[in-house]
Length: 420
Image (cartoon, rainbow, N blue to C red; front, side, top):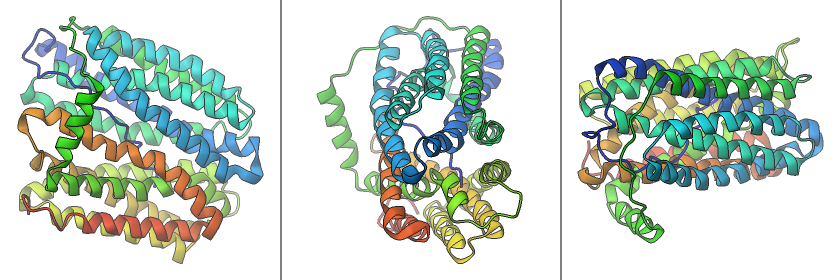
């Protein structure tokens, strides 16, 4: 499964009953641009992270590709997790979002050009970290647009427009990236750079903004105290643990999918691993999107969240056993469908569950920001864990461990008391 890469940091922005809130005409321009801007972002994250980057690492050092890719992904994830809150803080203090979106998008083009020219593991790591930095400047500004400019009563629609961009961008990005493998990787990086730069120019040209009052800087000590206070809530703590485990299981497998298709799955004759990735990407995206809608509606109708979250985790665990039992193309297709359905349903229902266990209604943005650590943290741990597991017990062992981790995620909803 090519799980959409979920990044950290909800910038601490005030509720919009302020000069930055958009009027009706502006909202008509803003809504589709949210989809376009987020789709472009996930085209870069998934097209590069799931296809171009692992292939580039393999070309640099084929013998140690798994360990090297784990190192590159882990280091860059740490860099991104630290840089995103910093970029959000700078954006808050400036009172503007568009300059950061535009600057991040344009700078990402240059960083991607440098990454495409890297020919050693060290330079690939440095290049990917630079791309992560520029993309997080872009993302931090973009993430703050909805709380800045969209009235509370329209945020459901805005969230849907943002969400649409994730599976579409992921599927298109992976499919396009496969066209540049193996001979035109550098050109592929430039193409993705042009996409994100073009999206940044388009967004900031179509959606104008008014300057907001500059945000007050929050001392690091106060931020850490708020983090500790949030996790004192037992129900929220269990949701945090469950989200962390689910993401860890998924990222442990999804980040290594190209190598899994190269070294573990018996593909039909004439089908290359990159072509296989491009083929299953839209299947994955379609199943994820379908399950997101159905899971959210079903949980609202029956009024229960915990059972659906648990079932989604169990289904994900079952999906991860399929390539162990059937390490062929049919097994991979079954895995993709089941994993897409599990991930989409989980994200829809678990997000609803989170809103019901937030420790403080007055600090919802802060608490959601804490939860995003459970999204970003596994991106640091998963590549390193997966590289160790593959080296020690092979890809079958990786799938089995990932399945057990997601089962623990299912068990984590049991102690939650506030929600049924």
